[in-house]
Length: 346
Image (cartoon, rainbow, N blue to C red):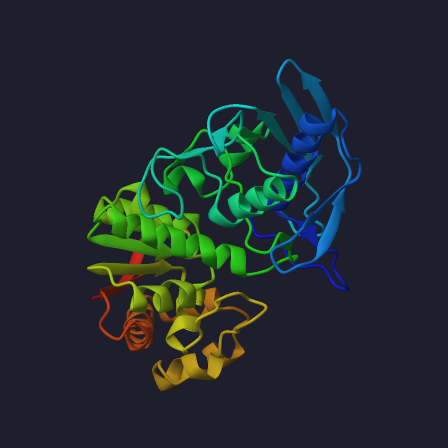
């Protein structure tokens, strides 16, 4: 269930990558000096300097461990409140990365990190390396862990992206902007990347779990082919235009597909609306008054039935085809609330 954005100014937060970097700096400082800085100050990719309070500070035979509690600000982030830890050991040559408890491993191609590597993305790695270098460099193994991360990861896209065993260490700026669409759209892009790297001939983007279940069952698609499109039809279509696939299915409920047919690429209720006059122009004259008086798209569907749904699916396909510009063979499916397919434009 999507949480609606509250009114008023919202407090920003910090990415797992920023928290892990702060933990790394604190632990490496302790390895060098036997003292933990608290608070620990790091530099973000765009040059901002920010401080984090330590929640964990432990030393033992040949290791130092520091932990930061992630504060996602006012964003409804599933990792808000998670403990992000870094355990550093003098080991090997140069700096190496290891996935500890609750941090996933990459098992499928198409992601920014190679198969067999810990799911610590490139920018967080660069941030950690920069802090190590600023302290003089050295040979060290960095183990990142998030206690309980495997359970939290079940609420994310990681399992279908092939990131197994836990969460990813993410972030390109270090900052979480509350209710930003960017993170969701980035996850859509990664899903497309994974599907392309796996050579899947057919992918599908759906507006919710009911339409996703119906589309997946109808075509017998693997989980990796299902893109978490949500309201971001444009995020799917524009990326596939630049990164073609053989076949794309868009699926959703009647109201969402009406918006797509009207030319909207963001289907969220706060950013696009069903145009009842548009619908009335597409039904027999005898039904136009009822359509114009309707309170919802569902009410229109109940009045007008599957024939209107089929027309909407065809017009939604036409709008989406304009964006795709031939980058994929497209079909559009409309699913009712019971999970039944009521229209299919091919």
